[in-house]
Image (cartoon, rainbow, N blue to C red; front, side, top):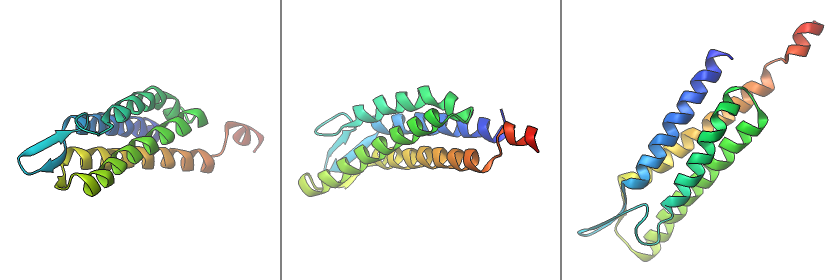
Length: 135
């Protein structure tokens, strides 16, 4: 396993932990009221579920497996979508402003998706072992 693959695995793990931590932080502030990713109509539980799915696939991503890369990217896409939809929905209904936890979840999920894309690009560009043996 290459160093870049191990680095990608650790970046993924850190991004997942930060995204999950963001769920427990403030997602919406309206006056004296602040809501986390579980309160009100927020779907922070989806971020946790898909974060755990991504965490299970990080090892396969680090080995260059397409299944791992696609699983991590797909989980990150759901995590991003969940947080962004909650932000947009809250702006239309509740008012107030988005909290730090929501933006931490979005940013960490974007980093997770970008790392999966980077792993896919490395997998496509790196020659396979059969090409080394043939050449």
